[in-house]
Image 1: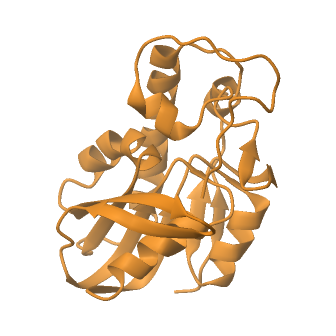
Image 2 (image 1 turned 120 degrees about the vertical axis):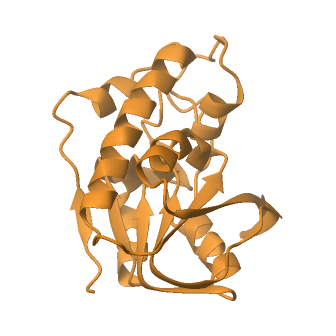
Image 3 (image 1 turned 60 degrees about the horizontal axis):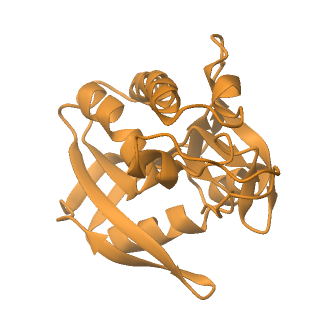
Length: 204
């Protein structure tokens, strides 16, 4: 199947709402959860009945999408990958058992993609033991840089905003100056430093 780029409508304004600075984490999580449900339904609808699916949860940000995809794809296989940057590279430092074999679709879950390097690293980890007719990257948002790179590599990209700005590996406006991992890590309110660029973190 030809790779596509699919930008979903944000009819309820949920994506716009999560980019507001200083939004409480609990509210931010709920809104991302709602976006995750819409994203999971859209990915499911793009597939075929009875297909075999592997969902790859890219930690930490992908953990925010996991509940919605686990509910929608109850019949799918799942694995989780923990990635970190070493110099200019992205390496896998943690992973659950990867269910090997042939799949109709492999779906990579990550909240934000800036350059695509994190997804490509996840793909390199998965492909020695798994292969699929179609690969999908499911994100809340992505920079133009990532969308183009992933699409050029033959991956379908689906999300709510796929043409965001990116500077030095950072997507703006981000999730209210928090990266997806920070949203996942702590449910309490935290004081954020002033200034749009301060407090943002690089994404893959």
